[in-house]
Image (cartoon, rainbow, N blue to C red; front, side):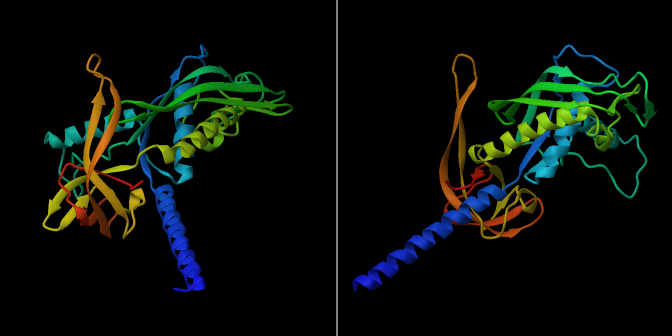
Length: 305
């Protein structure tokens, strides 16, 4: 082989490796995580005519949805109500109809977001003077709205805190001010975000969400082998989670390493048994084939390193 031909061959090989790495990185960044926001606890000492934790949770849920990187599930209270409705339907005490509530189909969360609001200053009284409209009050003057919170990212399988972030938002307005009037926060996200308090909370939330998105590359994306039928391996992840046809996953058994004295999860390791490739991808499930080793029901699937 001539020197020129050898250089061309090496160049082609390096280019192919770079393209493959780029595809892998793109696939990693394109995967979506199921996530649930639990109610943030108000430890600021501030108490008004509306619930600070509810407002924070609503803004956080809205911001997570806007990233396109998450499957945002209902808060714990919403899911509890959904399960109560399922239990009622299963009891036989409701009339049958065209659509029956089915149990056992709620999407599990891979990640949980929880936290504490440690300081809050609404900036405007919102209840004195001015003109009230749809839960908000416009008045003269201005003020500084400020909020501090600590956000925790938790692995729902182990309960382990994966990362934490101190979030801060501050908005100073002069002249015409917008506050929250008597009646409180009613779920009107658009209106709430126009208030000084809403803008401060949104600023702090966006800081936390940006941190979470940046952390995703360090958080393992996983799925479960839910069924093996002949040569077909069924994975409980689909286009909704960002899986695409031709994507390859490592599969194996996950072992949790626990502290023998406390039972706390210290780490987790996966012993890889094989590789599978997605040959048909639906909304919530992928049908794969084994391309190396073996795959069994109950195994975990993860993206190759």
